[in-house]
Length: 397
Ligand code: FES
Image (cartoon, rainbow, N blue to C red; front, side, top):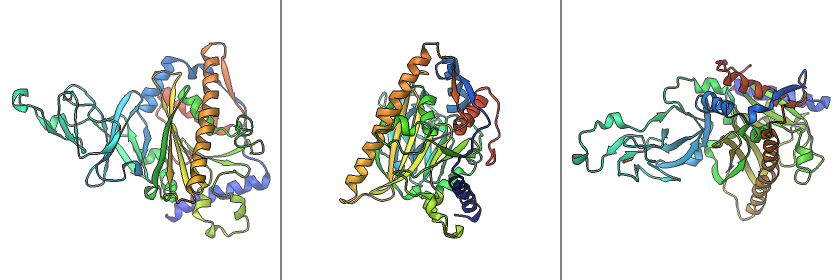
């Protein structure tokens, strides 16, 4: 890690310690209200698909999901079928999972393959997207294979994570968009971790589902039976462009490090694990939380819009720094079940009840308090983007 990145992480840790010492996190200037239609309006939903999910870099996979040459996975994002591959030279690729003959899917699920044969008429592609075989080509006629490659999306792999822009023509600077967050996340060395578990959970509007990830206000209330009532409801927010980090203003029962142990330790000796404390929010729809539960485990939550404004899917991915042993596996499995319960049985059912109320049309506004600064900023970014303005992404915004 270079000195500038370490200093950036250290400055965040220093500020977090100040907050602990003062017993107070930074508050917003005022309460902000938001028109509740942003969670239910189909036109607004379409604008978000266009200006956000089809325009911005999206973190679509951890590198270890495509650990070996030939590994691939398919997924659907914002109505687009996507195929992610790793080719023989080690590079990752992202394609529209759509045959150039008449749009059949060339791959399904996940696995390892050097070639993909479309199940409709049998055209074949390699994992770099080249059309390498046309079934019955003499009868089909002369087709220019070079013009019939899979549609390819811009891709960026950094810090053991893979970002894709679902616009083949996009010229967006993905590294610039990330505002250095990937350089800081690189401290986890996720490229060396492995996939342990993955699941998909249904929820309400994608922003309602994601709001809970930027909100510690609800922790001791909604999760009083799981996290317990003594956990803090205050977050200290740190901003990096549209991305955020959240530090909890109390001991976290499952986080890997409590920063307050560093009070009397020289900054130069602060361990990297401690400098990476808290929850990382990668705009617009991903959170990363590192915990210790038998093993170091990274919980990655990706919230994808569903078919309508009222639905979403939360994909939870669990990475481990090393495979668990017989001794550590029970604790790790118990933790995975714990997180699935918190999100699947507490957060997402709440989001669906909120959605039902908002869909009635009788809820006109929702409110974000001074203690919910991160949510205020998050929705300001969304508003700016759907209005068609081109925000400048920089580390200091
Ligand atoms: Fe793929 Fe015809 S649609 S071969």
